[in-house]
Amino acid sequence: MRRFGVTVTGTGSYTPERVLTNHDLEKMVDTSDEWIRARTGILERRIAAPEQTSSDLACRAAEKALTMAETKADDLDLIIVATLSPDRPFPNTACFVQRKLQADQAACFSLEAACSGFIYAFQVAGGLIRDGVCRKALVVGAEKISMHVDWTDRNTCVLFGDGAGAVILEATEPENDIALAAEMGSDGTLTDLLTVRGGGSENPPGPEILKQRSHYLTMEGREVFKLAVNAMVNSASSTLNKANISSEQLKWLVPHQANIRIVQAVGKRLGIANGNVYMNLHKYGNTSAATIPICLDEMNRGEQLQSGDYVLMVSFGAGLTWGSVLLQWP
Ligand code: UT7
Image (cartoon, rainbow, N blue to C red):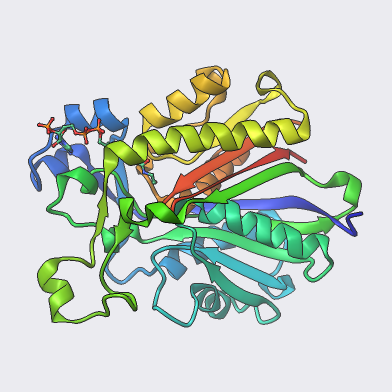
């Protein structure tokens, strides 16, 4: 039996001021606004300033979430930052967030599950709260993914953007737990489909890495597309089955925002009407671990989430990694 339940008391998000439009990209690589709109649904994305770090983006989102939750930073006893664009290889980005927020009482770590990072972090924080290890957690998806983007590669540079989204999770009575069911999975045989090959322990940083440009991300787009649709449909179906909730009962599907065609295919295969599938990728592109918490915050502040609504978050990313969580909004 669960000792505690978990609830959300605040959400926040932040995207950098600088807007990079499809027309801007037309001047950088051989692409067109028409191609990007039609093939991805993205119209523009936000790019962090050179001096802005992922922890800076995380803090801006976290401050808004803390204000909504009427919580002081030093009441937090856990900070998890999901990111694939850490401030430094180590120490972890959550420790930078702790220092900047002065959240002196929190245990801090980062979690890397690429675009699925927020779903994984949400699950880990929930488990620690349910076990009574922590009572008040800040969970952030924060990415300065522009640091990994090769701005000469039209196959990838049109897709990504920077941003952060945050939630405050708190202990509650077990019967008020907002997470009804969840599922997570990975396939490590497909690490090479979407990756940054250089700069880690396999190919440590050095002049060769820069010469080969292997510090930039590469992706087998078509293959990833197919796998993304299948994995998200399977994960979402499994979570709905576990909770014995049908897709017709869902108020919202909140999918990872990688491509409008992926999102619409997932919604269609699950039998969810377009109007119940949340999308904001036209404004931000793919912000990796930040897509889902940015969506949640927009929906929450836009009063599109009512108490009792069933909300299914589902993600997919490099690794491969995927996961889903069914919430009943508090
Ligand atoms: O967050 C993690 C998950 N990531 C994803 O889920 C991304 C999954 N993949 C995708 O979203 C899509 O595969 C892409 C948007 C990356 C590409 O769309 P696509 O419809 O799969 O295009 P494609 O790769 O099959 O390329 C079709 C054509 C190619 O030209 P040819 O070979 O037919 O002459 C590409 O070279 O489109 C060309 N192309 C472009 N043309 C103009 C590729 N990128 C561009 C571009 N502008 N930016």
